Figure 1 (cartoon, one colour):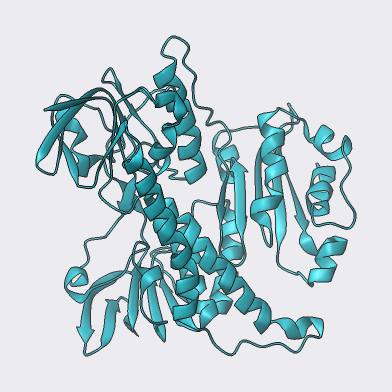
Figure 2 (cartoon, one colour):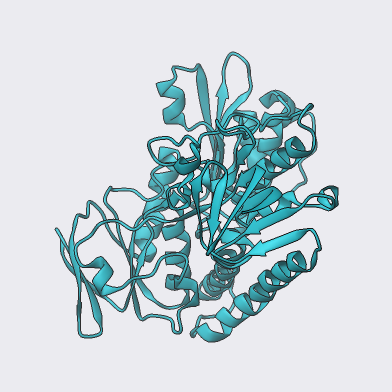
Length: 448
């Protein structure tokens, strides 16, 4: 059994732990999939490259609003796909080669499972270390639907690499993955149908955001709400989804019903690492598990499953590995998130519903993009900002934005919450460039 100083399982944010400070450590890195993890290969980065392409297609479709004679005449799917993966795949390959070329790094390209206390079977070999980092991520959740496995389907791991743009695409799910990828295909020419169990898309968002987003998608795509799926089967080349509303026929099927942590596949309980009822590895604020010398980070521990959270946790783990006598803790007070659909959605802090449930003294302010000068220029009649303030402390409790550049506009509000600024200071003690879009934030703050 080979013993290392450190084993890192997963090459997403886990790979970022290793820098020159570890040159004297004997390190094993274990990766069963493409090097670089979910974000680089099947998640954030490729999907946003597709999203940007879809935005251009929608811009061309709506040029008439501004007196521009543009229209969308079709997409070269293979060229779009090549632009994405001919850039991404070499990055993954070069990252793997870089690690393999380091004298103190051993890369294992194989599946792994714990078989005993700090004993990890990788392929045919068993390795061990006093220090282990679990950064094995998550995988798409596949619901137990009659006929699904036999019929064949795509998840976010595979849909972006299909060979042709499907004339008809059915999407099971209404969360952020469904919203982003479904809209990509819809904008590029597919007829897209979303099958939703509830009446709303993006149900974890603030209710006003969720309602508005759902209304927008209902105008652009086919939305079947309150859907119960009975079975799925093939009829020739068609995929048929039988529901309480009837039969939905399409050429491809995307299952986007969430993601689950990989702790069970890694068999972390064999080394006595504790998990919760959803199989997430339990950690303390220093990202330590209950087993001395084992840390965990990223999607295997955190249901928010965001790359920027995993990166933050990787920095904490790296510091704590090197400085055990001076550990630091994660700061998860204000975790922001964005949905790169069309429209974009961004949020930080609490929803209005959470404030009501917690009985927090609060006040809400809305501001439409369309009342600002730049909003006029955009002819925007649907986008808005919603801010929630604690009426006693004058601090923001939550911020929610639906519309263009939402993921960028939210940043100053994240910063204000982290640095404990009052809404009065955010609104009054800085300049807002006129007539730039951040004025929509300024005007919302002034209402508070």
